[in-house]
Length: 274
Image (cartoon, helix red, strand yellow):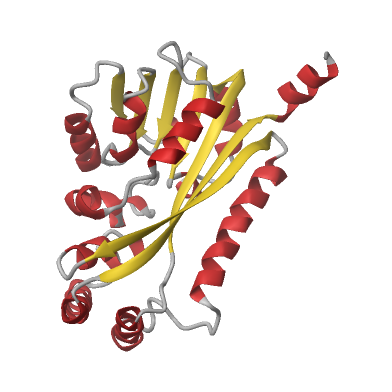
């Protein structure tokens, strides 16, 4: 969600912004409750949301009454996010990349929901650090799609292998284990940044069900599929729709990972003064 031009961004989410808004899953309510409680969010708090997308999370955050600045580089997604949050006077949506975002304000909470992995590695933690109040919170959230062992999922995998073998080459590794390994790597990256420590971590499991219309739309928000040439992409999505239609729906296990961080240096100083 964070790159523009010939990088990942233009070939992904903003191209099919309406699909993204219609079929991408939101986040579980217990996650929002944990964020509000652990970060001590009130109507006096200021939040910076990195990669607001179509405003899926922004709307729920706005209900907390806090001031929100949401930044999103995709013009189509920005338009949808502004529509979604129009009734909330405490929300401002800006079309911008986080790498180029400038503000004299220090925020109480900086959030990145399924977006932080798109930001340039060389500066992302430092820029978040500089955007926060010393006692503030850095909130990272990822929605990760897993595979079920259902017959429909097995047939869908067969279509992947037949139509898009070069886009999703079989490595012999278990897909679900690979997804979990990627999440573990993201947790390690936070530790390695040496700027933050993980204050709170929780994972939430949800089962999403998609039908023959909505599942192809969901796949059409994945960067690798969007970047596939139009003929193959249409053939692939059509075949996927036929498989799901035969079964009526496809169950997709969804893991939401919530990580709340604090500035390491501020914590060490505070605890030393107890």
